Image 1 (tube, one colour):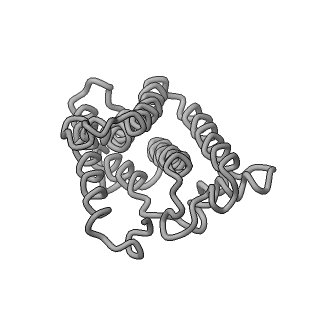
Image 2 (image 1 turned 90 degrees about the horizontal axis):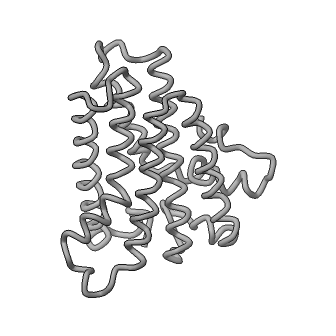
Image 3 (image 1 turned 90 degrees about the vertical axis):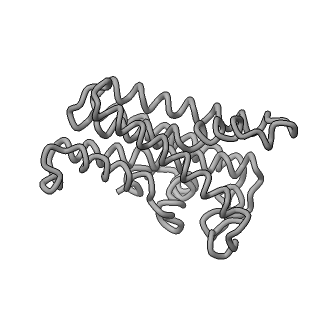
Length: 219
């Protein structure tokens, strides 16, 4: 489980890093999509329930969720958010410093797990997703008031902050299944993740205006 993967000898860091995997588990949307794409691209989807390939794709799902949660922890510090997933944000439970270190630790553990996949191409693709997440956060910080309502700016930011991780994870899942990076199957998985990621972020943003905070778990 992810909780055991992120365990550390330091009790405060361990609790902060495991917070979203224990008390506030969320939807598990990203690892679910990884495993669905893995099954969809398997030679015999109905039999894709175990084995070395399945285990590597499941590990990719864990890595994807760890990267996502790390980005949430860092985002909440930057945005000074009080709540996340219906409870207090990590930096409110501990401190900003602990939250930042916990996010960094999750990214470090995710990198270790990526290396265990022993697939250089997948490691490079998922590392690119990390880079894109940072670019998205910088875009959000630096976007001026005159660009806030520009659709292309919004879509680029949404790609970097959300869709990039999903589409890269989907492509990586297909590649772990034996498909080449430039194969029709891997490219289709990437495109699927791209559009799904953008749609997911757009709906999430709409819910910020139309949904109730007690239902969404965030202000």
